[in-house]
Length: 203
Image (cartoon, rainbow, N blue to C red; front, side):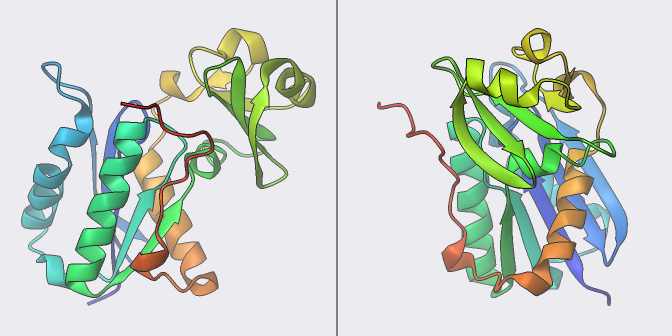
């Protein structure tokens, strides 16, 4: 059997669970918030359903890929914790990819990604690097004239396209990025950590 990658993301406005065999996408699910429950509450059951539908056992997974943030603090905690626990139990590789890099692959020739970081800041990614949480005024100047992917809150300010208004297959993008990165990283679950560019809220 070819290498099996299980990729999942609960950091953004929807949950993505994708199963890939080598470079081929075998299954991909998108789950939204439901009945006042945040979508990450459905992560384990969705993973179980995807594996069952494809006649796979958890032991068949070779690589677990997850979004490590930035994004929802609840979502970041959920997917990194599940990835670490599963990789440890299954003794398989695990790798994290930032939401900013994932979003940069939505369309060709994306110059920058800017997401709302609250506190009058934007999480900024360009030149293939995470630039941190940058003051909006400075981020706007940096992104001026660039092809930008952003979110609903900052779409008007940056004049870019909101990822929330696209049907981009973010789970599939995550799976493909992970397969590209696997040769460059040790992929040890112990090194898989949430990407908190700003500290989580207290309480």
